Length: 283
Image (cartoon, rainbow, N blue to C red):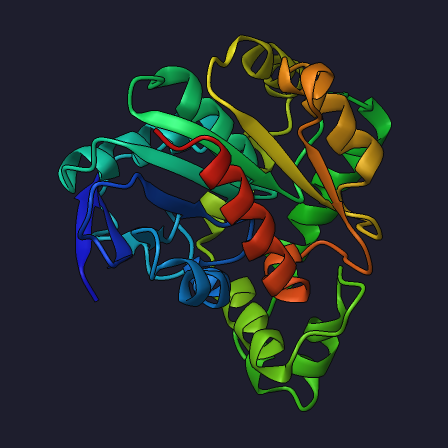
């Protein structure tokens, strides 16, 4: 597995079909997840577009090289800088960013700080821009409790993969993905998991997202699961409405019978929608 050291963290990545002159599709995963969930989409898209998947700092295989590494920030700007650094190190001059959930926010930030290299953004099960104080406080506290109480032996509990394959989705995932979710849940570094939870959900970070979307010159699209209870369609539409495409042609694509994992629940439909978007903005 190739790795690149970014800010004292060995980032694991995979680059598929790097040949040709088309922009690379860079896939950015969500909280407590890893690069693996993109593989079904990559299998479909990589014959036509180069695809880059990687693990965010502190998640999956992208862990600190030594315990003496300097403390890191886990806000959206910091993670977006990691994306740009990765593109620089791999000499990738043009990219479309595809972000799931938290990864969607990271993609938007990266497009804002590097518009000359990022040609467009596709957010998946990602939205927001509305700060609900009590809900966010409950969410952060619940997240903290989950992180502190997760046992390392959890992946060995009988049928735990079945439970995780049914969480946050409309269509039950295969046991393979349930098992992967348990592994990623346990493996996520505590500092990164808690830091990203707390630092990306402040009132300042939440309110800044609509401002970023409103000034992006690149095309920005949002794929939303109609039955997504984690990021409801109304919140996706709210954030999408700040981009000019919302009024001129619509930049929100709703997926039926789909929860919070569109890339696994509706893989073929997502690939079809993505190809249509990319073909529309070729050249």
